[in-house]
Length: 244
Length: 251
Image 1: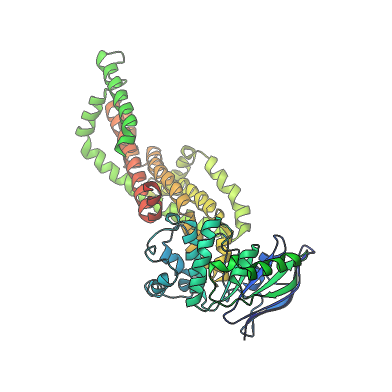
Image 2 (image 1 turned 90 degrees about the vertical axis):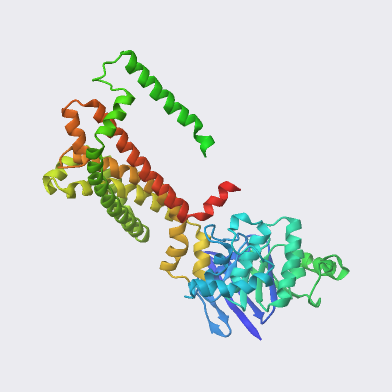
């Protein structure tokens, strides 16, 4: 079943085309990666999906409803965690609920059980600057999840982390995703990350950015870290490299 | 904290000692420069009058500061919301600050009389500016990505102000407030000096005419003491309002 559908979206800035005729869909519970080099318009596409930017043509449908250019339906997470430095982690995570008009106390009670699921126990009362980069990204993902329990956009969420932290965050991410059902559209330029995490990969390239191909990763879930060193994995990687 | 202030305390103590010695030796006649001990004696004997007058000054300072901060806050929010207002009024605001307050105070007395109004007007004029400038700077330093994130979550303007703009501008607001607090006392004293019935400024003009320099020095010290206390109060509020900053230093 289609959760999110992007239909023929195009966008130019000052007459310079950035995205051309992008059509992708995200099924319920699926993790789909958008893999592309920098400058292929990935972030512009995300701003369009989240409703912050109006596309020149095309539409964005969530559960069949047209949400083109309407923010407030789909939230995203960036490479920068954007946790507000003056709020404790729990109040950062609860922010989407506060914005929806939930009372402060109720919002804290609602986010509390999720800290366990997201491996963030014990940091509720800390301020963001007291936590490591990896923990902050976890908190940022939890905040995104608190906004919507069904669709999330992640824009290179782990790319600012060092390799070792990144690999532990990947492991953590796969674990968390076993417990929650989140249809996720994930932007990355990291091929390994794309293969490890996704059910499908769209390749986005060129100027203006277009979807050049679509690859299904048939490896069953839950996946383990050792998948990244298996021959199947390398075969996918070879295939993607030849397409890029 | 105590360890850090040792050099400054020593410097002040040495200066007082030097001052006392210079007076004791008799290099400068005591009617021109009273010794610190004489100043202290004057302070104690004059305490009832000083206390009574400082209440008047403090009342003006507080009312003026409150109004000034409110005006400053409103001006900053309006100019931040409507960039036309910013372009139109910001240069004017800067100009108001180049006019010396000693020049405006007599005019204000002419317009508003010898009561409290001219004092408060002068304080408002001199205190709203640091608050407005601080807040405007703070509003402009906001992370655009954070604003966009909140918008994507469906936040309206008021929510963006409440959750991002205002808290991000708090450090600058408090820097402005600290300056405004000091200005408020000085403003009150100046306008009393230039025309009024009571307050530390009026007291100063009286002791000046009497050439009672020991009392003059006593009131000068009192005024700086009050300013410092007000600034410390702002500092305390700052700590209370921004608990997340306290962790920084301990780390």
